[in-house]
Image 1 (cartoon, helix red, strand yellow):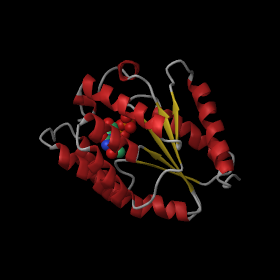
Image 2 (image 1 turned 135 degrees about the horizontal axis):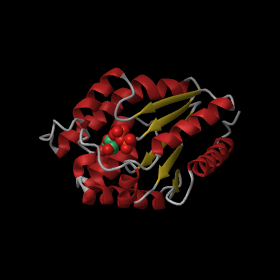
Image 3 (image 1 turned 30 degrees about the vertical axis):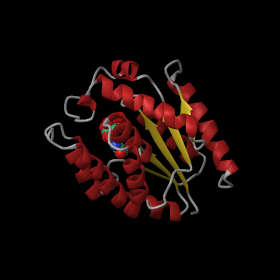
Image 4 (image 1 turned 90 degrees about the vertical axis):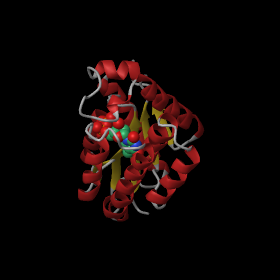
Length: 212
Ligand code: TYD
């Protein structure tokens, strides 16, 4: 595929969304065509699935339904948004993707990790990140930063042990996968983090032969 696919991962409140925005601005000003999107969501139907899976009112949602909803949202999103943008040669930046499912539904929710990985492969349909930027801040710290968990968000309400397991799952993935660029942002200023990420992205674009 012509384009370049970047995913952003991290624990809730790790500064991920801010960094995603800053990277997008930098790449735009360097002349790249960038499509920014998110999971769960990114297109009409997947945003509807997002509302179901994140609403704190749906507390009876069982872990398997949760997993399948994330995957259904992904299949639609890949088909309608991510793959077409990559085929047009865009850099696609997606806020969360398959590593989130491994960390949240596999490591933290405790669903069979093999099952999670195979469903990830089915839903992603071969559209895999060229680079994953993973912002690792211990959850105790990141929740403090954003002033506690969001009461309306079912995932954020899952508790401290859950979010610690997410964090540890991410750390394990970062160790075994070269396409992940992991960064502990706890000691860094926003702009410092942004320039480290931009440098890495430009290097990887160059290595892939897709730099402007
Ligand atoms: P969001 O408000 O976008 O959180 P954040 O700003 O931290 O990215 O909500 C997305 C939530 O969905 C987040 O808690 C992580 C969770 N999630 C999963 O559990 N599995 C998944 O496959 C994905 C994509 C997200």
